[in-house]
Length: 185
Image (cartoon, rainbow, N blue to C red):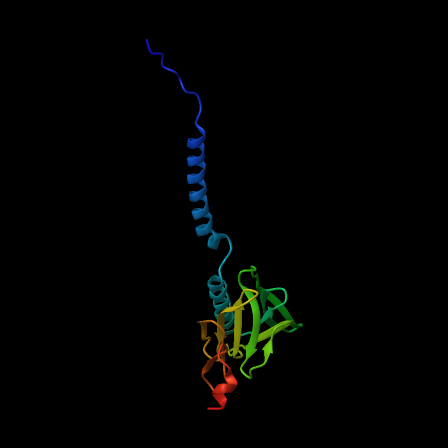
């Protein structure tokens, strides 16, 4: 007569198969969840664009100047509303945002072509919403991935792919090309 042996536990092959399947599922889920945990440069550029539009609109609505300060070295920016009263002038902080390492502030370029890559850059918005023309470059340590272009009038803000800046004569140039080559044409 045959005896039926009862098996207790799992074989080594079954354990290896289960662990490898779990490893594959885990690696796929972690890579897809990475952007939820750490915002991408696109997210940072959209947030900066919204902040610039908010500063423009706040200046008009409250009929008061707003100053956006971009701290390049500490990778953050903040905005103050300038409040005038009979007792004097005071500032009220309305926004403060610290960026993650995935979307660093690389530099800020004004309309004259002057690049600010250290310190604090101040972008004023007057009581009627007029600001300065600036190109704000975002990326990682090695490459500029997004350019946020702030226009002087009407609160216009555009996000461009790569390293774009505006020229004083109007238009834009891509800094991946050499702007001096355009002038020689």
